[in-house]
Length: 617
Image 1: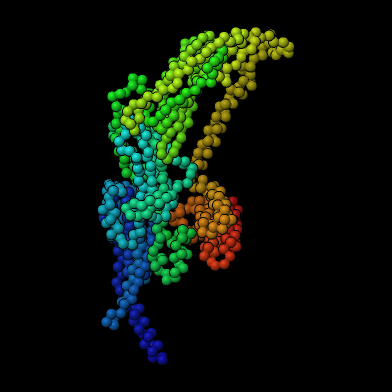
Image 2: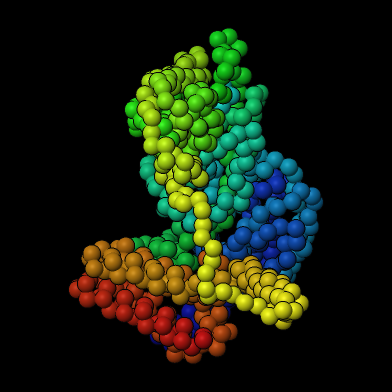
């Protein structure tokens, strides 16, 4: 027995000596050329266990992710010989933000106390952006471990319902996002401007994006409308709608972490946004395509001489409140133009009233209805008239012409005409009547035109006393200047404070966490355990991210621990926060009383946020 143990010991000594005698290779894999705006991978690989790894600075590029460490190992016995293959990789995801030639310095590592270094890498960044798919393909091919999001998994696009329109015709423009992966932190970097167009937003910016499913090229995408607008061309020719630029963070499951575990519970437990290390957070820039619209001039044939310039599909109606009236009394005539088109740009009507009528400027009101199908509504012109002479008067019909792009013809609509019978009114009343407004409610009587002299008490003032030059005069003179200076000082301080994004997030952290906890409480009351745990985890992680200005892409239990230690939070409190996170996830999948577990975890979440907030004050 002792002999067997001795032989086994000698075997392992020889095996270890053989493995340690292997030559260490430390290399780098990177593309030689990438496109501006492209994401690519740089990977450092060694065939030995690395004790310490020192990456370069990546000057000229933006670091999006990394170092992402992976390890593969295998042992083989061939013809009585033992061999071990170890591969340690550190991968970085970089973003090419500018054109030029950039040098990446060597990376270094320590293996058994000996230092090794790679060679320097020179990468050329050329123009082409997102359209340079070949460059992106080469980068992916050179780095098989690269975790990326390609244009088929996540993209945005812009759509219009018409590519050829008449000047002033309504166009529906929609920007959509298509995704096959979870997406967060959507931020519009550049809004599409529309030179030569008048635009009206059809979506409520305060509403949450509505999601729906749509099949594209045989794949079922989750789609949301980012923007939906009605645009109206104001000039002719070929007009361009520039691309929209959007930044977001895509969550890609860490397949290697799942593959490393044989426990089937691992996939359902750790493959969750609550544990960020089970996902790769990848920042991605998205662009829509450039859209060209051909705008035709309005036809000359059949164009009325008094063409109003309105383009759309409209109708006009009118009403009057009195047909029999006395002199010096007011009547109201309303004209309403309604239909589909740009209601705001409808010009004033041309109405011919009798010369014996006193006519006041019309009161104009507009009601625009914004629907997913476009813009419609109505515009009201309300005239107030006062007849001054007795007689029978005609108010002629009012015509309104417009160009209908559906029929491609000019159309004319008319209102009814009215005949008004004016009788003699009260002469004494008329002499005291005046009009001071834009509708008949503003007509009033002055009353008596002779005023009595003022009687006792009188306001007396000493001879030689003047307000000008007095103390009160100078106080009132300089008081506005002092107030303006105070307002400017306070406003500048407020602007400076608001420009500090980290400070604003820090101030809003508790408020946002309470809001999410309130929503989690609603799910708790409804018995919706899945949404409850997701909302509670987002409340805890979101509080830490906003409070310490930590990007979500690097947020993990380790980084939270370091930030809390840096802020001198008590060790017991840090452990309690970590335990709360673990309790939350354990309760989510543990059997038994789910309602009791949800109630317990919810109280723990409330308490831990309150404790951290009180200690940081």
